[in-house]
Image (cartoon, rainbow, N blue to C red; front, side, top):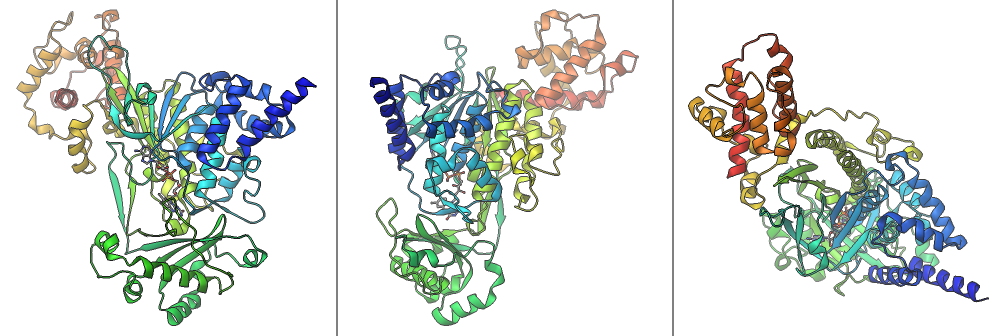
Length: 624
Ligand code: FAD
């Protein structure tokens, strides 16, 4: 009897966790459950299996069977693919959480920091069929019974975050609310702290996460990405002003009968928009209506009608000024949104009372989509004092979506999988430039993805991009083309320069012609001073044995070449080693092969100057 009671008790705690309806509630219920079962999520390698062993109710088992199936993907290598890799994820939005889950499934240690303390967004995300399939596979329905029932293909942002948070906790992701990322902290240079790696400056500064050292950091903090080093591309479109509005859903049958307006249908009904303009003076380019937790509307309004209806007070060319709070009449905006919603649903919604946002205000907002941003690159590697850090972006930080089209979550999840794939390659020891080249090749496909052109066999989707993108060429960029993404300069000192030099690799910011051969020679001599058997007197024959080049590389990155083990007689092997390492690690393209040289070819002086200049540029950047 006692044992049974015990089991009921545990079952109840599990149920509390599953049913919890807020972020804090879920975290609390999870803690209570763990304490009761005497489990510590910090033991991330055994946490899931221990939890599974202790929670055996049929309800829990239904979830385990879903998750077990997911975990059986061969890419995860039974949860061993990323053992020992430590990841920090900035932002607990849908994409940060989705990425966290994938990394945890590969055995990585994952910490997510979220600056807010609640999931409060009522707005609704459109889901592509594959995302619905993906979320079902994670057990979404176990946490949220109404998830995408029938023909429904959307979910409120807060509900989605909550589902993903619960899954993340179960797979031993560490999640902290009220923690804001400020900036990256380089590993310390001094000897005493040798071995200490990359960390983050956070607010509050004394939070334990401040001590977390990681080798992967993922920026998932939304459209205003805070990680430095990523240049943003701007898509300047025509003026696009979007309005979102949420009304209370009382879940009556009358409400349930009202037809939704899906994101794809809007362009076909010109008459609708003409009538709306005629009747109400509201001029829209599109409108979407989803019935979810709230009655949610998103529409794109034409500026003139906003001016005519007094929503926007003065007409400014500058959109930021145009939509600044001083220039918007909030009351008029509410009326505008309500009128559009009423007309759009053919006056069928019995009441249109605004739902409240997390500030206790009517949940209506206006956003500017005239300029949309995408990061030029999806990832980069930083290296300081021998510590490499893989830096990646996902979600809105990577590629900003246009809400009425509803691409945010769909493309966001694709990027989450692609990032997980990259972290896997990274953890398995592929070189930085190889990993980056592949990631950038895959990233090129992302902005073009549609429901039509991605893989149709959702059952086979894994983190392997080949299962999802039909026309994948994951080698369209070569390692040497991404060498500007390998950054070994000091963190903030060069951020300004990086932001203004557009499409120009940092390492090559100086003109090659600037370096005079005599200066280059002196520089090479200085760098290789004291190396055994290295004697540089010119820019050609002194380099033939390969030893000098090996010394130069060793000077920058001692870990790349074991200098003492080189055999000075074996010219072609030394040279080949140096050429390979330089190409792989610094992206400096080789100008010849060790083989060619050993058959007696002379070194071409011009080629040598160009080649050695690359090291000079690397070195100068590093020393600045
Ligand atoms: P987000 O969902 O934006 O999540 C980023 C998270 O990072 C947030 O929780 C934020 O609090 C946190 N964060 C930010 N900075 C830091 C920091 N320094 N440290 C720690 N944490 C940080 N899409 C639609 O399709 N339709 C909509 O109507 C819609 N409305 C939106 C309304 C708002 C206010 C916002 C911000 C986004 C909206 N979106 C909408 C976009 C949609 O939410 C995203 O496309 C989707 O959620 C995936 O985004 P994400 O996870 O990359 O980022």
